[in-house]
Image 1 (tube, helix red, strand yellow):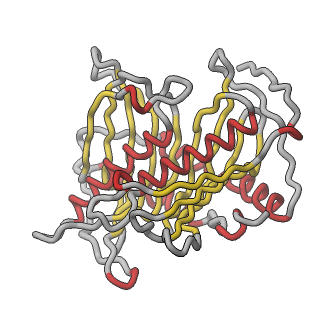
Image 2: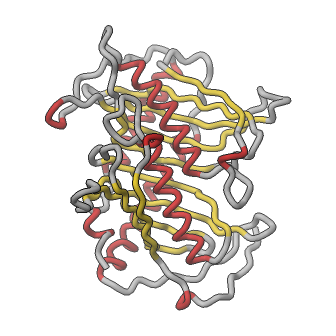
Length: 335
């Protein structure tokens, strides 16, 4: 694969950006108690995209989003601050760390809620990757964040391998939710494809529906909330008019959490069975109780060969994920 070079020198480019706005009713999760994880992931993608485009001077696509840790719920109607900064560049890729903070509209004291790393790839007019200006760390926080980005490359590659080698079929007995719809024009980005953040919102909606259904206890409505999303690999674009199928299924349960695998596939509406995998994600949901603790959830015990194999891989991914040290929000917010 060939690439061309962007000529503008890096010295003329800004390596960070901050977005500020107020959350709206449409950002609220089911139940109305907090902002939906899908909304937060949309904000993350928008800020990361703006940072990547500002640095590269080119159209960019989201290639990966990892370790989205929702440390606390964001109250509806909050002021939102999303800070994105470049922390590493490859030949055509840019690693961007994004931190989402929120504040009460009266106090305006922002507190971090979510931090994660995204990888964007710069594309030329022909759709091929283009080289980006090399970024060099300058400050103490730059050096530490660049090291953190490099340290995650090997574990991320291994997690992707585990996720891609899995095959999911209708023979599975796993609790699942499947959503199908046509991609509307309103979600298009500047490249004519669906926003990565929009795809992540769809993933959260399908995963929530699956988790909420599984954790429902009799007549008690579930307040399942996402506490983690990771391994989000964007493998192919989602185009306007595509038929989208989002399959979310439980792959593992611990005493207080539900681990879900969500896969987004697309097809031409005229050949709906000819699906292409475009995006995949692993999410963790819990049912919160008073005091910030999580309630016990019903246990899922896989019986089929496929479900047992998938659960085994899920455990391996969890083990790999635990070896990745979370990036402190305080570090990402340093000058």
